[in-house]
Image (cartoon, rainbow, N blue to C red):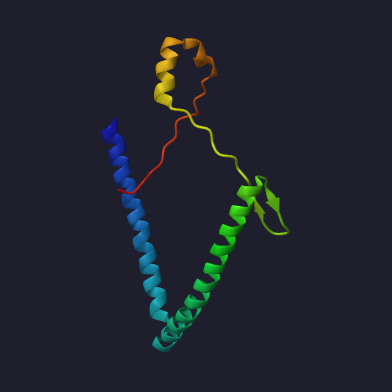
Length: 125
């Protein structure tokens, strides 16, 4: 069974590579249509706006950090006309290994145990 999944993963990687090649080929054809002087002007515009974008991004990052800090101190969700900052109390976690050991000695605690459905994620290696 694992070999079958392994083969399917290899096929999936192959399909993803095909998609990447198609995108590269499409972009190459589009680039051929753009005259050199237009490409140079596009690069100039990109360079001009990169600095402006970095400044705006820095302003956004600083204000977001300030807002998050204030909401954490306040401890409640805050809404405005366009945005909302949701306050989430810290997540409670338990030492599963120790609780499993405890449950072996006191199985009645298992009626309070809930386990979510298993799930998968596909990652590049």
